[in-house]
Length: 224
Image (tube, rainbow, N blue to C red; front, side, top):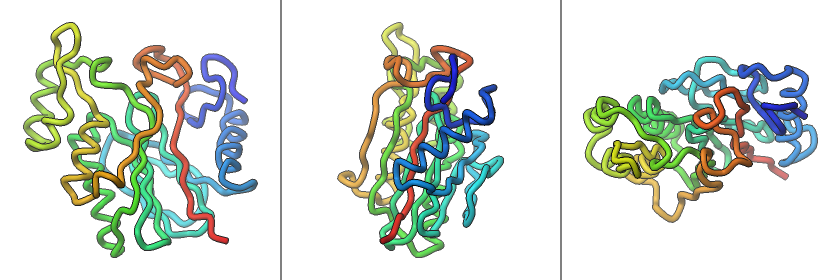
């Protein structure tokens, strides 16, 4: 429902889009699962705080949501950062995560897995939505050094690449996958959907366009 530069299915209310358009877009996203599905969406802040939610609405200042409420859809947004959905192995729990380079350094992936662990739940499936690829995400050497210093050998080796112009780059999705496997998630349980947000003009990309919308991943346990 959104007009340029947010067209068409912008799911974020903080980017300057008309609130009524965002509300309708979120309703349509939930309806992809089932008409009338209630939706909880995070207002991400590039940190590692996780909220356990039981009702729809905007959840401020977190980068992960977890629920075991049947039929409640969770949404993680991104326009270069990685939006990820997790299916728990307890037939009840689902989660979503927003992870950029700051989230990788803060270990938001580990934080949401810790919440699942406390609930006695492992990861049955993980789906990563589209994000900027490492070749399209050159960064200063100091930022690459932060990834090395704070993410550990396995994650930093997967996340750091060399861009075509010779600069270091960060493949956030590669780092997320490495962190999932480091925490025991099976490689065949991890799936990636969509391509590079910068390269694919059908996707929102803040890095490419500046003012733009946000796409997202949506997940719920629908029940019978």
